[in-house]
Image 1: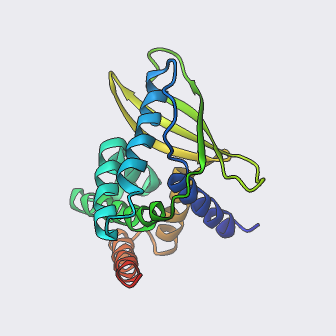
Image 2 (image 1 turned 60 degrees about the vertical axis):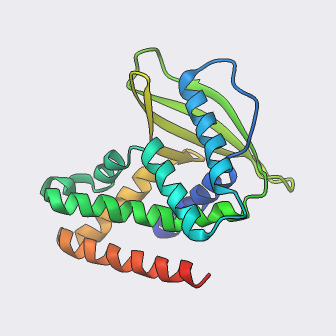
Image 3 (image 1 turned 90 degrees about the vertical axis):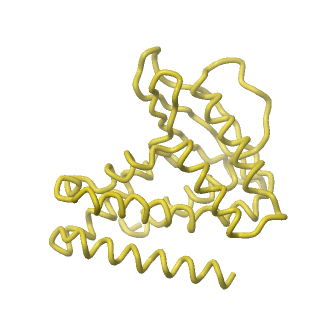
Length: 213
């Protein structure tokens, strides 16, 4: 599989896992970070899998969930790689918003077709006091297919938690996205303005597709 095909496969699998992996389940016996992921799933399925809401409302709810539970600013800076050093404050603000727009427009609608796939939190990895912890989960897609391993990297700040990466079958979505963004920037000579223009075009295209669906 080529690098581009592999990245697309990871992105598709990750999006499917995000949409399919949230299901109601018994509370864990322990592990506060693991419970954070469990509760995130409960909120997602309650708010986003409602068949009675419009696509616009689902996108609005997904955006609120994303801002509340993911460190979008940190992820945005990470995916820019070394090019983050040359971006202005104003460009960074726009990039973060465009990155968020793409996530919302790409993933939110998948919850409309949620079919109750099984989701299991297996364990929490990390020692007390660790700044980052990993929550290992497993999705049972059904139809005799093997389970999908989905791991959540969570930043810990006291009693506050935020998702900073999702690993699908061991492949980091943040790293995959960084490879894609830095590849674009390497081809255009590190032109941040050109990257932002491309992202604006992509957001406009996604919005048009969603409005016509």
